[in-house]
Length: 553
Image (cartoon, rainbow, N blue to C red; front, side, top):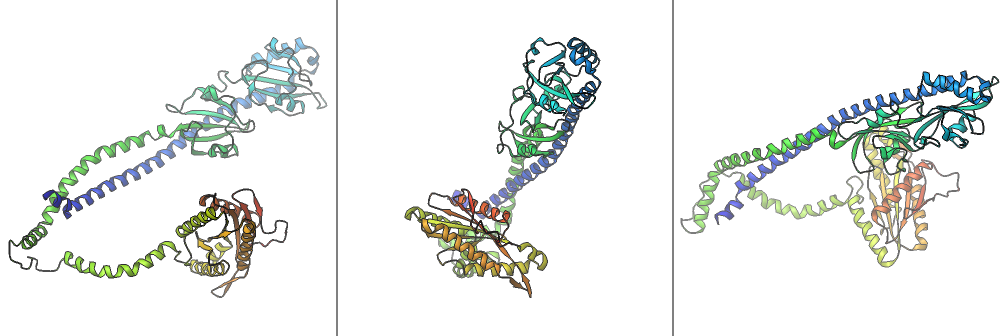
């Protein structure tokens, strides 16, 4: 009995509320501190990654430029008569190679058919090889210096970076090609990128967007591997499209990383400096453990202090409750409780009785407010979801179709900006009235966003589905074509509509997504029109696709 009384005691409840407040406060501090530290440390880590990526990118770029400039100088200085003297040409290449040995696998001169004339150092494995199909040879033969695609060398049989430049006669005609080959594993070339580590597990990547290839990486297994296809890593897709900067992404192994991208201008490549967020945010984890470690003794102290404090404050109320209980058992005669005034408990009892009378009156209004848009009175997203689900259920049972129209107003923002939000609200109310006149009583017209509306046309046959969607969409466009008058101001307004035809096999999410995408295509196509998409399949311009006089927003 006493245990039940303690469990039902207001003191117990207040203590529990207090504990909840303390725990909630701790959780809030935990979340805020975590977010603050992640943001602060993330910014710092991103800045560090960017600085490292810039340093490595500058180093790689400088080495590429040095090799390009050397090739150009040698091609210009090479005596043209040596092209017919292979031994003398090899000796000439050797003299200049020894002075500045930048190409670890040497240099060679090839004729316009791709056959080597002379090389240095001499590589017997080049004999009989034709370089005619290599991209760098073809570009140089056409008169352009070129950094080739990193690949396994025909002679080297290991990953190389080839470069080539044309050799011209005095009249400017290309008569031969000078090429330099550097193996990617050459010390002093890309070793800084391949061997350096960021923290414990961070690393660098060198990527060629042109070739869609990993040129170099901290992980040797990634070298010369193709980059991920589009759509696998959105942040990588942005980098391949030209974005340079920092961000957080998830790599192919599912590890979240802070990445920084910096261009290597000379080759059209870019360097990626990456660091797992688990390592970057190690300080955050330690701070979280600290908060959790000291939360337990704090909560225990509060429970003890709160219990004694609440018992002391509510002691008069406990005595009054004991007095009333003794009267109910007949131990003492009935008499007024020893309370000289009406306190909050008495006032709460009287107020509670008055509240009950109002509950039934407000229940209907509360239900309406929960399922309808307060501005237009139309069904809101919650009620729309329920009706759309019902329409899908009927379509499944009766093997019928339904159409979903996604409407987005064209030109609404200028009205808000010019006349204010109150005028914009009035326009939305007028729009709702016009659209209500378009749909049937069995249809659903809902407002789901600022200037976004959705119409659901249920119970239509397969043959009439597209025609019904088109007819309603055209009526909506016609209804919006008449100018709106607000505050004695004529406000032109249009609407772009995405229409999707669905059946019982569709999901509500897929239908809404397809209609939304079709609406955006209608906007891109010129606004003031509609586009029909069948179950999120290829959209068709439903506003008479061949009509070049389609209305604009």
